[in-house]
Length: 347
Image (cartoon, rainbow, N blue to C red; front, side):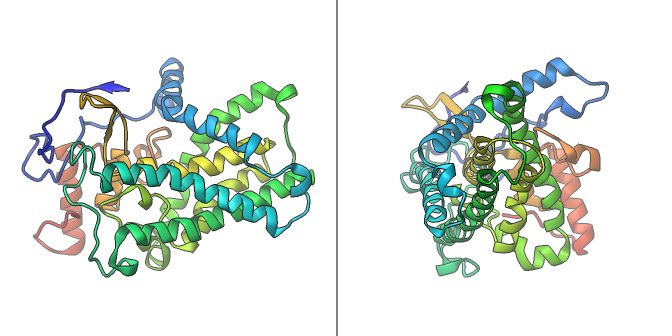
């Protein structure tokens, strides 16, 4: 939790770094994990893994996964037989968990507009008249793709993986005998997910995949909580292939469930559109909200394909640090590509 100076309730939150700001812009340059620094910085890396990777949200996903595994998942005996009944239970559980997180954020930030536009990256609200969305409504479109295709394909991957575990078809580890390994794997999930996301995201920006699948997610330039896994079914197949690691790396069903929850539910937070969430009645008390790093990808499309915990973008020259100079370079690059002298910044 961070303390910040209160902002007035009507400001679109231009930080004063130029008239091109379209809403709130956090302090820049963006900082990323030192995990790839050379020479290595082990102390700084461990500190980064503690916060912000595990605190405040990482520990929340771990706790939610523990609750889900112990009380909201069919028994291993039932899952030893591939049956639509228990798979439907997992699907409904995933729908409810995503709806609780994304729905609560949407209710607070967009329906009630409880903090108005304070900390909002884009001054505009979610579209209700855009014909590129189903029913011309961005929110209902996002809910449809998230709950039907997103939770559906997430559930298939998770169910097949748990079925394999229940039949001992893949190697597994147990907490009583391998707790240090599984503890490290619990933290490692957050790093593996970022690496996997970078790799599949670059694939999705190949022209064919973008034109046939990834375009659907990128209609959400102005993102909201339900935008997180609002994707084409083909993209969901690629995105949730994150589960495949547990078909070859010994793990535990808890780890499988944590992978699903982190990749399926946490994007509701990172796509919420608000950099900070105001806590209580005091506007000065906030919790971390959306990810500005990824917001810049939705804004410019050709940068920040990965995420901060494993900053692969820095290795491949696609890192946008949020500074005015980086904005200018990106827009100049886009002008050169499109052969126009007019600004092509997404709104």
